[in-house]
Image (cartoon, rainbow, N blue to C red):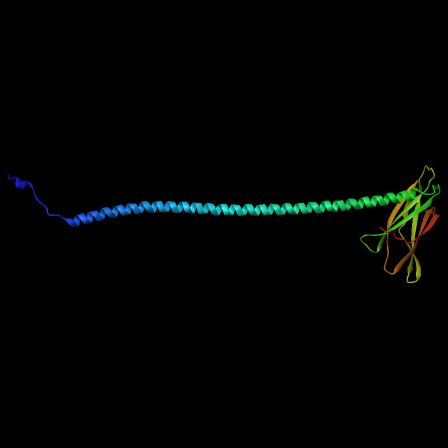
Length: 224
């Protein structure tokens, strides 16, 4: 056989080569696009995660700030309330001290003096009520200096003498019980109407249905 018969010369096919190159390029581009898209999705997810985290942090900060403001407001209200309570307690204690000082001065006035052993209506203290303008409170002191085994008993009648538009009237107050050894202090209140002008007060000590002792005091209100 001739050597020429072994070699066949084919004609070139440029279109097939171009199509093959285009196909390879398309596959390569598609693969790169998928890779880049996947990376872009990851980047976007990371960005979204960071944004969500930032938003959560902002919300947490707002909640913390609101709680801090609420706590501070509650603390401020509590401190103000405590301060007001302490101030009220101080005022109340000051009033108590003032009242005790008045009582001490009053009892010292009652127990001092002539030192008589006789039964005496020693003191009548009148003061206007701080809350009710038409109310007057009284404090009556009765003393005796004898050494006795049994207390002196009886009743105390208090009569208010008033001027009612030019007419003198007597108004009896509630009777008080007497049970005395050395010093007894009786307290009560007198209600004054607008048309009455108090003048004097009669104090009568009643024993065995008779007046054992009597004294009249002028109407004089104590000044603070």
